[in-house]
Amino acid sequence: MQQVPLLQSLMKEKKFENSAAFVVDYDTQRDFAKAHGVRFQSTIVVFKGAQEKGRSTGDVDIASVRSLMERAL
Image (cartoon, rainbow, N blue to C red; front, side):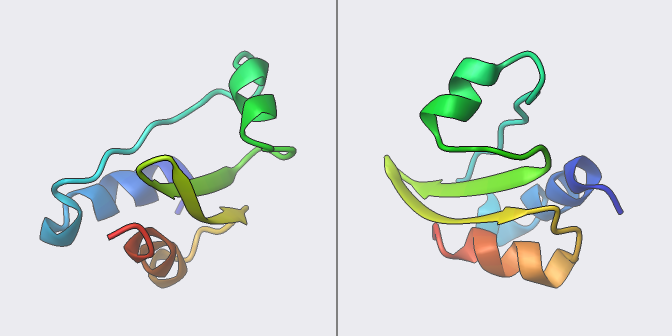
């Protein structure tokens, strides 16, 4: 499974109903990527408020990404 469909699936879970997910195009939104220290495509960055809680690059394992997202709950 690719990351976008995986995130869309996870965002439907009740525990994430008050969460937000944004997809940033690494190739066209370089300023955002640079501001958040994203050096590679396919990077997931999880925040709680303004504080970064975790990140992962290239992860498409649903259990692993769910665990990453749970850090922001």
